[in-house]
Each structure stands twice: as C-alpha cells, then as structure tokens.
Image 1 (tube, rainbow, N blue to C red):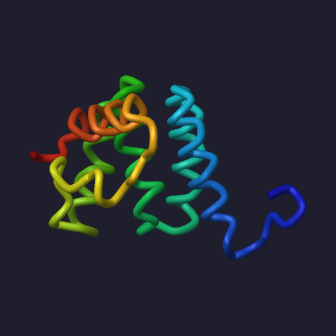
Image 2: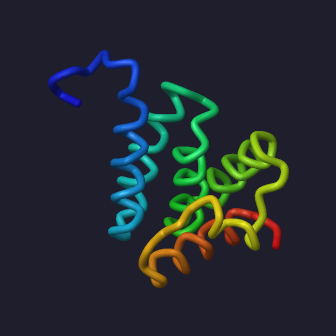
Image 3: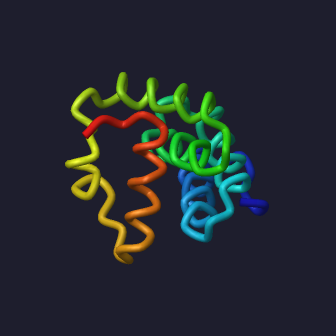
Length: 109
C-alpha cells in the first residue's frame, strides 16, 4: 500500500487489513482500517461488515448499529442464518466471534 498509495484497488487491501485485525481480536485497528476503506468506497460490503462487528465487540455500539443499518440497505436479505454462506471463515471460533459481533450490531436471525 505504501508503494502505490493511489491505486484504485487500495480499498480492497484496506478491507483485508481490517479483516486480519478483526480475526486477531484487535477491534480498534480493525475499525480504523475498515473505516478507511469505507471512506474510499462507501458501499464496500466487507469493510462495512468489519465496521459493524468490530464496533460491537470493541464497545462502540452506535458505530456498529449505524454500519449495520447501512449493511441492511446494501443487502436486505442479510441475516445471521445466511452469514456463513457469505463469509466462509475457516476456523469455527473465528466465525463464532464474527457472528457474535454481527448479532450485537443488530443483524437479525
């Protein structure tokens, strides 16, 4: 990212960094990277999901709920029951944390 800071695809690298920080349990860093991606591309689905889940688990419920409201606009069919289809996270404990963050942010069953 430092070598090509104006790359139009940098948003995907930012979202990947956000996801990695989320999976490592660093919710503040995850939010920071995800928010950069969302600033670059407001409808970036993965980055918005990371904002919601990391905000909820990181103690920022208003941020999490706002991101969840935006996610529900982007995909009204998004629910806890179909979360696994959208995000095939390999390790069960990682998926459970992801699911819990999304639940806390307001994702319905």
